[in-house]
Amino acid sequence: MDPTGTGPRACGGAAIEGVALERIAADLGTPCFVYSRAAIERKWREYDEALADIPHWICYAVKANSNLAIIDVLGRLGAGFDIVSGGELERVRAARAPAARVVFSGVGKRDDEMAAALEAGVGCFNVESVPELDRLAAIAAAAGKRAPVSLRVNPDIDARTHPYITTGLSENKFGIPAADVRGLYARAAAHPSLEVCGIDCHIGSQLAEIEPYLAALDRLLVLMDTLAGDGIRLAHLNLGGGLGIRYRNESPPPPAALAGAIAERLAGREIMLMLEPGRSIVGNAGVLLTRVEYLKHNGSKRFAVVDAAMNDLIRPALYDAWHDIVPVRPRDGVPEPYEIVGPVCESGDFLARARPLVLEPGDLLAVHSAGAYAFVMSSNYNTRPRAAEVMVDGDRYHVVRKRERVCELFAGESVLPADPVSG
Ligand code: LLP
Image (cartoon, rainbow, N blue to C red; front, side, top):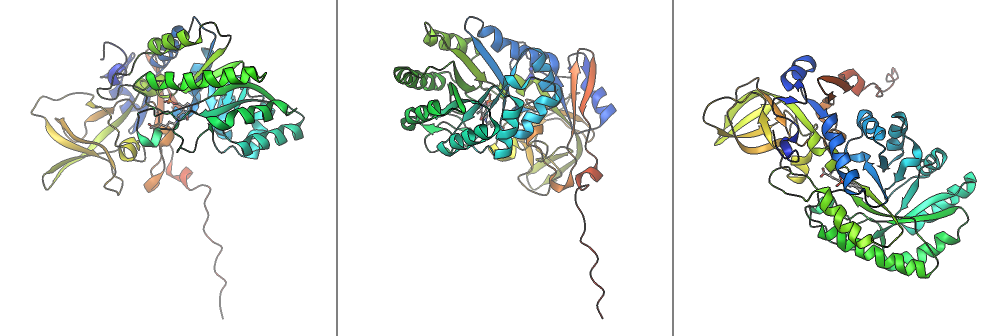
């Protein structure tokens, strides 16, 4: 157990809270995601307390893990929600969280998604382009409503993270170039169906430092001052996602460090600060349990074939991401370097490479830091049912998503009608 409570083993070891991982695996089978309610709540409170001195609104980024139980747990703490699709809006509503606490981000919102979000009464649309603003205005006018809007600025700041999850550079598809922002605010402010309420940005995910946030904040503050000169007053400033987490040896700063630096810059301004953390709330609050099926040698390599695969956790294959892998009952012996691979028919199907472990078939492994961008990115590739999800709450656990059954995977499919009989 990580004594700091922040590292990949903040949640894990042989038990999560008061429940043994062996018990969950024996009851429900593997692969299986297990989340800790206490760890999720602790991380959310860390942000909330760090920002206590300034008006703030923390909107959990639902995309990181959209299970209803997680939305519910955070909703009970008063969290808002950052969504990127009509589907995520339906999840928030199914978890009985108020739509007014929702901000709707995303670069490609469809008409039906905008209409549904307006109807539900979301708190803000984070608009990313001129055509999106015009479309939202038209949909709001047709519905006889006013849409609350923030414009997402692309501040052209390098977040110094993996290129696939860098979003604030001018070459990325996201946001509105800073040079165009002023004109677009004027257009929004003049439209009777739009209500300008804020400004936002998001520069990337898994940020290991505070400086890129502050550089983005500085750009936004300059823009805000220019807009104030134009008579446009903004009620909130949204800095986007949260801090990175420790997967291996990263040491991202704590929320308090970020909050302190932001508060300093916001001193004397009447503005509500918003953040949309996802990964740092749930990432280290979850593990993926998997069992070793086979051990084999090919050439110079030792493989442990486990029952979780790239369809369950695609991060290693997609980003070359490192997740700690820990036997739930460690064995004595001399560790050997294992490739931890799944049953999927691709050589890219690996969870880890060259991990020194002592393993036997049947051993239960915990893949750490699997609470964020894990289940939500899972697929049915190779007709593999998606794993069960469990939330531990003290000394009890709840199945918060049943393991899929194979028949469900093709329930919406059909074969063609019979061929006409010829002759
Ligand atoms: N707000 C916006 C507009 C975002 O695009 C994102 C993440 C967040 C908030 C939440 O950022 P966080 O606090 O989680 O860093 N699948 C990738 C991560 C993609 C993140 C995309 N945007 C991964 O597995 O690393």
